[in-house]
Image 1 (tube, protein in one colour):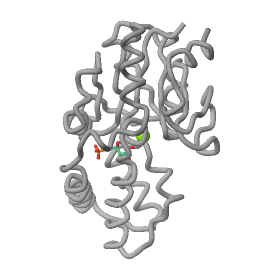
Image 2 (cartoon, rainbow, N blue to C red):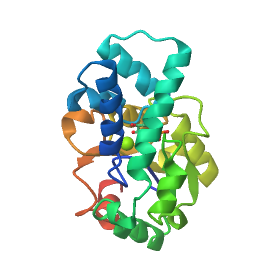
Image 3 (tube, rainbow, N blue to C red):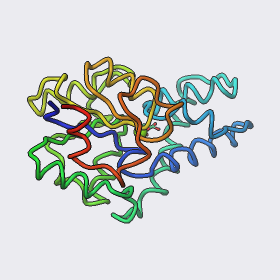
Length: 216
Ligand code: BG6
Ligand code: MG
């Protein structure tokens, strides 16, 4: 039986995945190469510096540490400009109703995000009060697919991993959930979410009753 749900943030609760993409595409442009939407799938769920490494690999660009740090900072500045005006309108359809439904049914809720900007985004969208635990990119040292972020969430909630269900939109996140010994539901397209127990397009048609019928 599921006792806790752990949510990824970007691409699951809010559509910030497209803002990350816009910001990285700008950096790629500056470096002189095209960064496609398909390439971007590899960055989803991955931390900022790790994402930069993948981007540089795709563009076959070599930089020293100093230049890398400068670019990561620049990417974040572009990203922050895109998210600074976020409102609750940008919460993905069905998310708030589902969070309410979970609370009504005494399911604990945690955030497990690689983003250092996660607390800011939860504040902007007024979602902070729904979460019993918030684990973000400032609190972990190992990027997904390492299970650290989800295991920390389970520990803070006091729930064993086998009773946790993760919602993820990234392949790296699905693998992190599996590595944590947790159940997981993918949000998006099946081909990008291999290994998930189930894949749903979003939370619009989803509720606690459906969850319970899947995880008896
Ligand atoms: C993840 C995103 O949630 O956070 C990644 O899926 C992003 O695309 C990562 O790189 C780190 O985010 P931030 O906000 O700390 O740069
Ligand atoms: Mg995500």
